[in-house]
Image 1 (cartoon, rainbow, N blue to C red):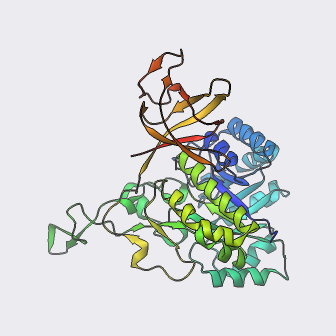
Image 2: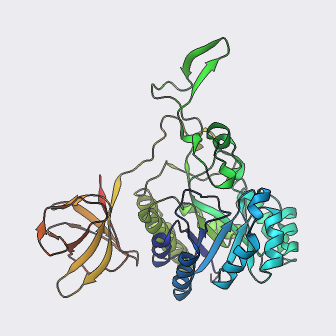
Length: 412
């Protein structure tokens, strides 16, 4: 099988963009300072976007910019100039949900690809044909579709435009609302999720109140901490790549612009390995599925589900007794450079680690090895017992060769 499958990873900032690309992403999606749905992400100003585009293209990766808010009139101020700036630095595609923004993009940057965001709730072949007829090159399908529905959409496009692309989410957080159209945040905190300011009230604790007993708060679930009835499990499709490809999905999207560089590195690396192995040898891929799942569980998560791909979600797709993530490993450092002559890695600390800690090094090539930290040196090469300070630069003695962007984790 030689079909090209794109692995699309999140880039919440420049470090995560570089991380995603070095761990195998074919493309990244990120937000500028306007029109995106992750206002709390660091996002990119113009100079940072230019640097990101330069880095990505030098590594044969593409960059897609989100412009997928549900726009109000004042959101259109300066939009033409913004799109022209993006075109000037070579953005590969815009991700759009609003028809008005789409129309302006087609007029102002007619040669730039436009991907229809999952926020547009595209759930049928007629909508896909509509967007294609207007000039879109890809649709990010709604999360609520099954494999059978995706296959029908794919087949319906063959005679119209066989090169038209379908993108689907394969891993990450699931929204409780239909393809992300949530009003809870706006109603409860005045911050509009559909304009990038979600406060995630679906993760808050809730109790039941009876109309005639306004001060009696009864837990919906028998747990003194409250109830978490809105908590969706995370999506994980690592063991269903054949079904995704068979349904006609050509871009596998990982959710997580608000996640850590460790999350981006690990999840991107595992999906990269799985995709390449499957395309080379399906039996080998199936044999490695337990390893892939085991590694993915070493990133912070809420338990895994297959979302809507096989059937409508059930009670097993929700988490009822907790609002926290399952977290078994700490992201403790990232390698900045390596001196092969003395086997010393310069490491930027992310969480405390100490002499005697057993850690894993996650290589950009997919290799993972474990060693005990025997020696740590500060920037002046004085021996120290621990690296306790945020983003402290230290040197670590390594048993094997490492390189820039390799990630270090420690079991909690």
